[in-house]
Length: 434
Image (cartoon, rainbow, N blue to C red; front, side, top):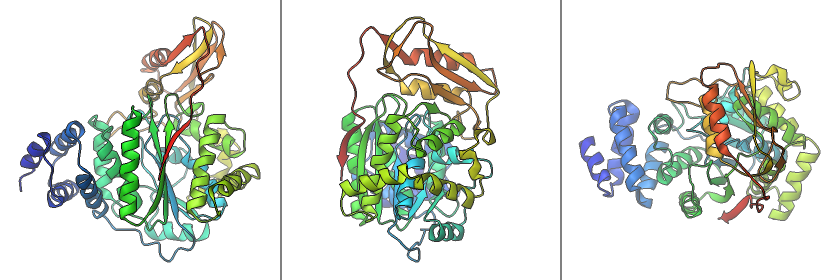
């Protein structure tokens, strides 16, 4: 079958067969299908979408492009957590240590930055020496002895997803619900999981802007999990402003450390605790969700989650002292304060513009080949609902190169809305799909 014919048919909204999608994915993974043809196919999917059957076929094709991870010899109930991507979203690095401290085994297969959103692997790799390229034997060993390990795609684990993931980032095809679902679920089904918690972001800083589309994505992923006999729950959460205050890889590790010591932002702490509770419940470490919430809070207050994260850093080659001494992390060489010319209440912060600003100065990727600068990013000084005086600082931009700082600064200024009246508070957790 000709790849051109598959692109043509998908462009016209036709449904492709499981064999046709497998042929396309296998060919791209082997190098027989070039980037430009896969990019054309992804753009066709972006505009015409995929049926549930096609999403299932895409998931299966990416899953079988590598080896599955056999974790049957690893003890404990195995649960993972994944987010669809947001600005300042570092909840995986808070919720997972809390759940692991409660006795749940966490085999986490994570992704890298996409578009204006950060990636868990990139955040972890800002810790000097931290390895995300563990072999499968190392992964299993760490799960057995630590109870929590993090890896990404590799030549062994869903390699086709790794290649397509990077291409989506460089071709403006990230936001497709079908492609998001297939990418996430192929990684999750690669491991022998017992449970999965999904955080589906919706709003200006998410790839999904409308609640109805976020609900559809959540339902799609939960359905894929159910067909694979995997217990799954999805939270639909607000991403109309950055989560927490820090945006940028090393800066977010600092905020993770503060949050795990119960000194983090309210919004980040709340969502992380709820995600941890769901992981603890699916991990059968609590009889019901209410008990799971109590356990998650206990593991935060007594420092068990903080100690567990240090243990993971140590096991994967990093220096756990970075959580106590932030000077051991990459630090930017320049800082710019962005102020407001008028006083009032912060009525909105466009999270996408904030994410774009961080990407401009090197916290994200412009192309597949771009290297991330782990030191750069920004820290918000105010959040929605807070009052600010004229001349007050809205944000501090941390950079190492000056060439795009002005553009980033303008993006931040455009992101903030100042009003005379305080806005109505927004819900953080909008819906649960299970």
